[in-house]
Image (tube, rainbow, N blue to C red):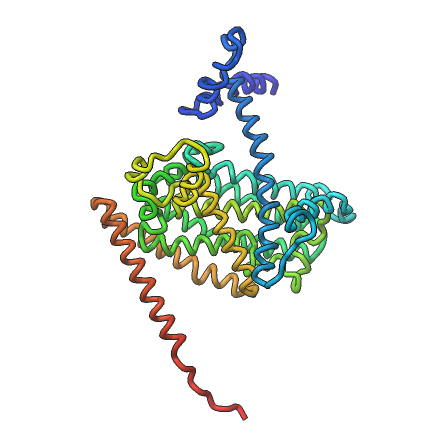
Length: 436
């Protein structure tokens, strides 16, 4: 065992540097080593610098990303209050901005209850497992041209695999509580999440068929040439349908209303985390909002151009984007480009999730499963077939012609749907015979 461990320690720095175009290696060679004293720089190993840079990035990642759920919790309370004509939290901090922080302090001092007859090890491990893998998804999402933790060549596959582990934590939480309501909630949650992972995966397959790559940066780069016209949501009529299938499915996968059956208070108390309290409950709560932000960022990356803005690639040099400053920030906001643009797109999709939650009633469990297995999965297979045919037809035709045809078909479909829906709503209901 010791020789194997020794070999791993000796080869670990070599493993870190064997990846071509490693951003950490370039940073160490171009920025870190030149700034060291001359005597240290001559003998400073590059592999050690890569490890230090990666550790620093992990520290920044751990410090920043957990703040996102705190912002989203406050945003949801304000959005729900506005929809219901209320003011929302207003007492703690200016306009209630510190209310979420106060709630976090309260949870820190709440009793940490562990069921005496439950599985204590799994009970303690479950919230940490869900929390860790919910945030691990962010490692594969490109937030900018050079703002990516790891540019994996199977980036979207990594995201699917990591997000699937959350199901294990949900089942562990329900089983370890030794509570039949928690167990029932965890099984229903697992069934829901596994079921809706199928249309999510099939929707991602449509994107992979068009781009012919699993790398997230290549998926974004494929949407850069014509600006908003080349976003994958407009690339074909089938990707337009796929976006809505994907977005609704991820809402169900993160257990948001109207798909929050595992947390339906009127049916199973509070779902798989019924027995949790204090910070262990907060981990589940934080993970839910982290998942909201993550799936919205993934949807923005796959279908809405990611950090690519609305302007075509050929027009950007004419504007002469400045490297920094307030003018550059304003331009990026209005053109939805760069990291700022991706964050705006992501928060817009998060807002739509909140809007849906406070607008629609909860579905029944049979309606939930029927929507997935009888509608979304067949439509997803139809989109895959249609995308394959679309690629065969437009493979040897200039891309701009295919985009024009796609946008024309999408516009025609929307107009037709609007006419049909308006006609159906305008028809007077037929009078029925009285039951008296």
